[in-house]
Length: 121
Image (cartoon, rainbow, N blue to C red; front, side, top):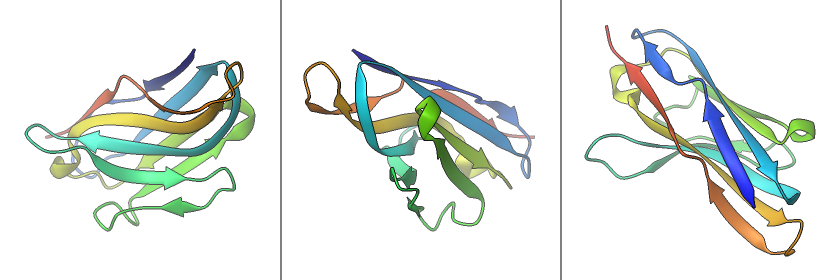
């Protein structure tokens, strides 16, 4: 079984920064794409950032230039550095991984439990 565990959320003032981490553990053969999504109250879940195993990244316009995704393949961990935070960035942030299970050799999509980010003065 594979788990994703996020950390790093919290309360921050507008203009501030936070760094989220997400560590994958369990029966992992390989991890392809890893990403961060967020869901604000009353809204649908949306993509925040994605990174491939080769390091290619993609961001929506709403966070481009402010957020940076990175990963440490040796640690099966993905990070999200969030700068210049705005109140509209307030949401539960979820980690996502597209991976191959070591035991079953099956491709899986796994989600973390979410971590709350609140941007408020």
